[in-house]
Image (cartoon, rainbow, N blue to C red; front, side):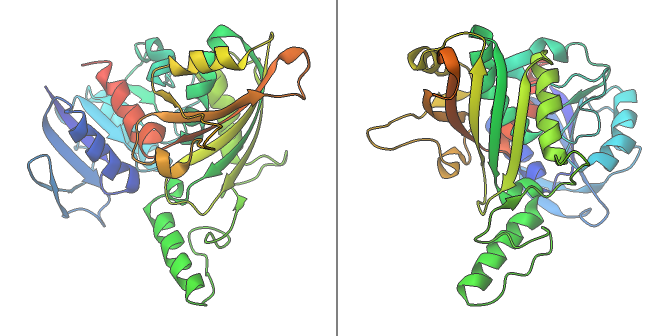
Length: 332
């Protein structure tokens, strides 16, 4: 049994942490809910009782065995090393430590062994990276992947609770004949599709796209995979969808791909051509598995070495909180 801290306990991912920990009956003797001064003092009904959210300080981690961080990179950079020095295992959901050579970047279904090499901090990958690598890995194990062209259709809530509120309020405004005024995003999100709201570098790629490249290489341990990402926001409340065009090292059959994906932990194949039923963000919402479908040969790749597919995953669960809790469960 463990004393567990959640940093950012009142945010969108923090709330999902609480839900996942309760559902999976995580063996905790006590939970410490931590947030900014603005949220401190709030009462939260959870795990059979009422918990008071406490302000995050340098002294918050006494006797804590597991510390889940989901409060942004600046908070993680300041407090995660402090928590680790007290003896807590930090599982960080921000980008602060993902590419640090000494910090494992872990998706348990893919590289659980890497978690054992931690020095007090384990990084949780970006949500889009997790959702892509879940179907990519079982295929790569059987037939090494040479190249992936991935396009994402990312839900508003991936940018946090305020972004989801903006989508909902703008939708009401537009339906009432009022203009959609952006605040969280740089353009209106209701009834719109736009480039991901992260900074664009001189090479034309935004931060989200670069994460998908660099993090995938680190997780699968293969920097030779060519990855061409385009990340977009869509007016969806929850769960990201991605389309993948994959080039393999040798010929691959659709039937073999379905078999490998169907046997992969954390993946559910939804591929009913007769009924036109394939993964959707609505179906993926509040589910642990990443849904995979539209598995088909890519005729643009010679020698039958190409497949295309789509996948949908709940970015607050497998893309964030669930993946972090699964990492902690490796040490129970």
